[in-house]
Length: 326
Image 1 (cartoon, one colour):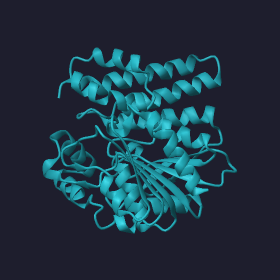
Image 2: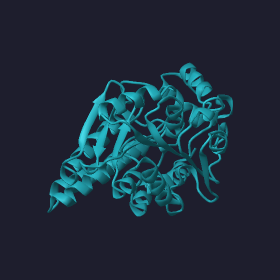
Image 3: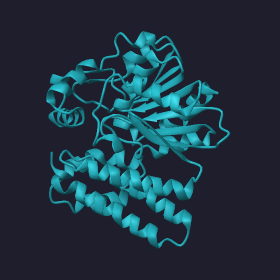
Image 4: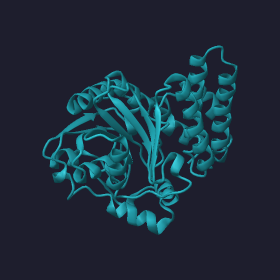
């Protein structure tokens, strides 16, 4: 894929994650080749770090650190990106942002996860935000912010092969074992889950196994993967995150909710974009149909992750999830 094509394909995802569209266009239109992607995005992130150091107030500094974290995260997306370095930069910048903007935020870590617990210390409900194949806890600011505004605590996490843990671990299909460790560490009896992209599979798989899940929302989550039909760029990303092509093929074979969907017995909301068409990926409608209490929200003009249609799903999804776990 050309750099212009990759930038266009990633545009709504970047804007949905909070990158300024004008800055995004300035950065991407100057790229001569896709190999320059990570360097350019890291440079943009460091410019925001410099702005944070010169900021006149802690709030301005924190906001610049937060934006820097987003740029560093998006540096990881190109096929040949040095994603380990960029992910570490994103993690550090987000930590500096929260130290200024949300000093009560707590870093919680375990053998297979790391993340930030945010929100009021007296919040009675907690939602875990689960990223996907090449996303991380630094990407879904809009989702986290929408939930925080509704009074729930939010744990935004990286799991195996994701974000800050990409350098030391690989993706795994039995994600419920990781979420179980997270719930133990949070010290709560019940949680809500929202998973985005491959994270949608992760949270549905977890809801089928973990009785402490009170409600689950998936956004652009796959119901099934067919390795042979996946586009080569998706296969390449899977191979990098799984630790090789054979491991990626085996991982994809296990991403199939056919037998697990009926075991998701709690409230379930499945959100899909009608323009989200990836060869080899079956979208979430069968999950909503087979789960006993599944609901389906299809946004016809939405693309993958629905960054081009947030008003059509995010407020309603945040309301639904916050209401179901209270």
